[in-house]
Length: 426
Image (cartoon, rainbow, N blue to C red; front, side, top):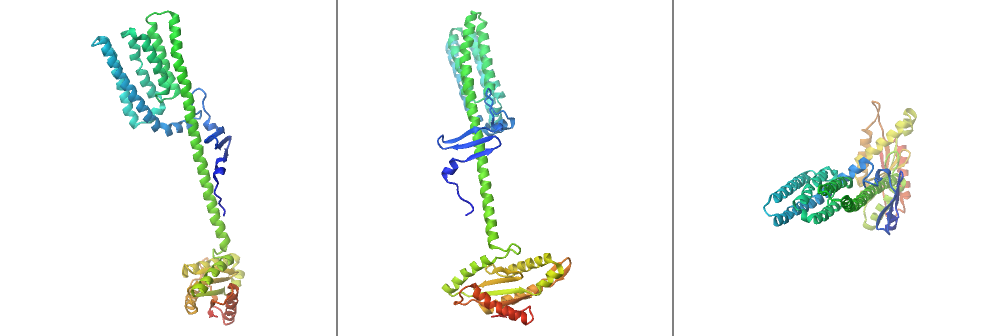
């Protein structure tokens, strides 16, 4: 067989090289390991994104629907919490001006969250771009800043909530690490500025900035690692698809090669008819049917008349055209079950399964007449072709095809001696 299936161990040890890239299937690790990454898949250390813009764009398009679904879930949770915290404001403040101010800011934040959710459903690409998500995140911070002034008694608690919010921007809300960092920086600066308006000691502001930087830095590092990991998976997926495609193309190429090799091994290269090896094999198959089931089988050997004159007068190229012309005519005229082979030179052999001698004579006579009435066109000049045919029926006691051909050859010799362009039975 031309194609051998790769065993499981072969697949696990497959190494694919392309340019400067090496991708290895690692059975111990349960997947791929990229030893040396193609420049298209190089990742930024600080952004956690592909340096190549086209690759980064392809990644975002691949992830946009998944990211949008996750972002919508996060936004629903965020919006719900924003409103629920308003209940605590009411319990503490009652129907006061401070409560209405905070609640108005909460409604504004929730409104933008709801609008963003609406657009995300029809435009999921917004989720991977990052700018819209960052804007909504920034809009959510003013309500946290205002709490320092409306409810100063919970300043410490509010700082803790903001710390959680800062790290959540990186971990809980799907966004690009750099865009989340912008929103976190806004929240950090706004918080420190809000506290600074109350004129605390400088050391308190420095300590506050340090405390708020911790969740921001931790969240940023975690987000970068997460995004690098996601993009590595994307790169591995692309390589898997590419390798599979390459393997499929190779399998297809080998299948086509196998078909071509089989064709070349069984057919005559000039006429496309069965060669000697193939028609002898088919003869043995039909001979077995004859012996086992009593089927009838006739064999015909034919020789084109005066073929040497065509080669001498018109050249071998036209001689080759004549052979192909005759081969096509025989294939078109005879049954699909009949076997047409090239015996050698201008000689052909026909095997007619399930056909006795009388029936074979009728078939071959019609074939002879059609050949005579189907001249070869030579640039507008018709060249009549004829042939002498010798037909014999295969007998049970015939040892092999050579015995039958020798009998037919004798008839072919008699036919040529009798004037050619005729059918002789033996």
